[in-house]
Picture 1 (cartoon, rainbow, N blue to C red):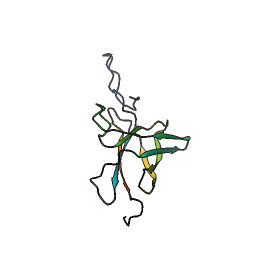
Picture 2 (tube, rainbow, N blue to C red):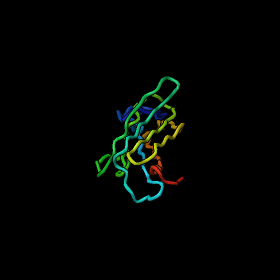
Picture 3 (tube, one colour):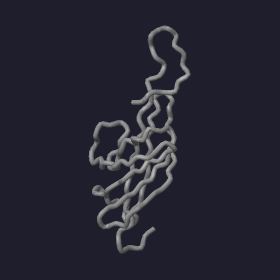
Picture 4 (cartoon, rainbow, N blue to C red):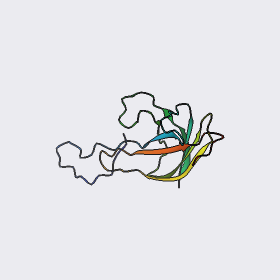
Length: 135
């Protein structure tokens, strides 16, 4: 949980008007371009976050079962985005055995600093099996 940009005034009651906002996270759902029913659970998903102040790399973890985290999705690759910036670009690089690599570039993300904001990004990536004709 991070702080917040709140315009609520302290009324002297000792209670704060903002409980903060959640750290930014991403769920990357991988799909076989030919058979969407196939589960791709052994891929490497690299996330590259770039802002005006720097860059960072994170690897996403496959969530096979409910992990009781509100922001993660079962069946997706999940990561907390750890760059310290309010606005940045995300690149996703995916490799998986039996598939051509996939790269998605320049996904714009703005951290929502309003009270209670979840800051969850979900993205679908389609992988093409090697030696196949698919889009």
